[in-house]
Image 1 (cartoon, helix red, strand yellow):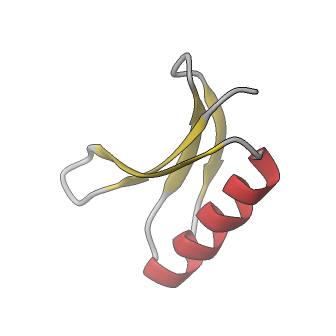
Image 2 (cartoon, rainbow, N blue to C red; image 1 turned 180 degrees about the horizontal axis):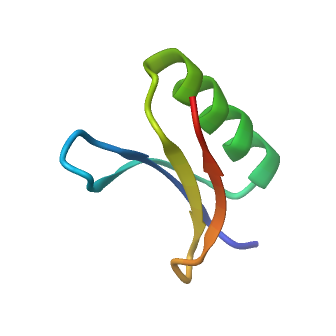
Length: 57
């Protein structure tokens, strides 16, 4: 199992850690819900730092 990190983009252009999950569909749902609710960009990266998904509000 590979760990995936959910991060959000702050007002200074830096990616901040939100949470880590093993299940990608759950991570995507969490990130999309928060992107819509807080009007911020979220992304999911794997343990190697590769981009898995980028979510816009």
